[in-house]
Length: 165
Length: 381
Image 1 (cartoon, rainbow over the protein chains, first blue to last red):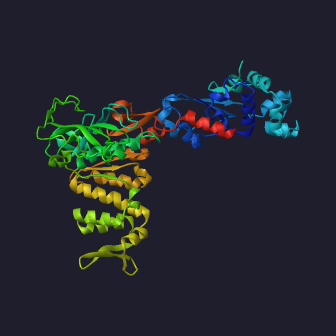
Image 2: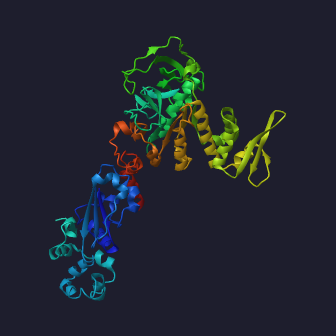
Image 3: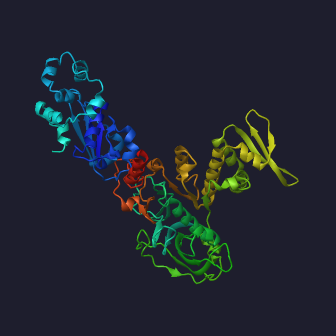
């Protein structure tokens, strides 16, 4: 069973968009609860996770920016051998994808000491309705471009890695 | 008397033909550890004081508990109520350990008597055989060889078996129906009478204060040898004379349920036998049940080795249970129920609490994810 656990609202809008437009390597029918879940931890999901077959592999994809905290699996420890956890990072903030999509990455780099990506898109791109922006833009090229531009630790995946080819 | 096995060769409700409920220990007994949760019936022949049936809703717990009750009812009363069986024909094999240290095998075939309209099924076949425990016997007694008891006369055509008259198998077997008390004339009167018959009055006082410590005393009042009610006194209040109906209203439901369970158990501690409770957690908190089990495991309290047979959804109760072979997991596949044993049929991790494994569906005991998603998807439309 695939779990898509997203860290914030922006990630949720984007993963919803990708899923609804069939752009991910998973379909909604394959993922837990048939939708991405806005959860940093599993606490409130335990009763539903428990209904899965005990020996079903559980693949958690945590989708966020830096994802510094660990996913606590104590309450599903009995299933430990069937669990895998993937960190899908977009750094320093998920909004960097919008900056790349607007071809403003180089400009943004000049201002990194001054503004965060979230602030940059408000201040310099005048985008305040992030959901409206994501719903009306296909960010797949920006997601792929991000992977070309940024280098992650080996243990961290890129959003591009869960996009269909 | 100890119920060792109950088998339904032709099935019972949704229990498959050939289903056998086995109460015997199934694993080797380590004699170097504390085995207070077992009774040693004979050297190397042990019996668990607690037997559990666990499973999700509609998995067959109540059916299984009802079958166990029917088996004890046959041994106690020699009869099968047609309303208990819900079928025209009913076959049963009951293996039990008698008070005379013999192992008995009772086989009975019953049929609904459509002409007489009797409340009880008619006996079409029955036999009673016996053996003694032998070292060569398998743990499940599957290779035991029995000899027919010629003194036992089958009551073919009748609705009452003579098996209930065999003194060697007499025991106290009490299904605890915690809903039924509401419809009885007086739960309290029954408890009081039963407990006083079998224990001293101080036990009753201590028991009632366990559940409601604001009660100072309750005692029956007789005039001219006729029972006229109870003297009831709460701490700081005047003593009042009340009838049993008023008493049933004064005492909380929890107190009455607790009194029923504990008083029945206390009687069994003195007489031996089996206490059967379906869905034990529906009526009591976990701590109360845990403490009752501890009392069952205390040989100074449970003097005659009474055993507790119960069904539950409450996996946490099992954490206090050291054994695995007395825990049975029920599953329903379509229209049939299967009974699996935690020791025989599962690879149980010893590093984790049993409840953690149950709560994580290690024994397929929770609701089905796919069915849950089907419902949720429909509701989200």
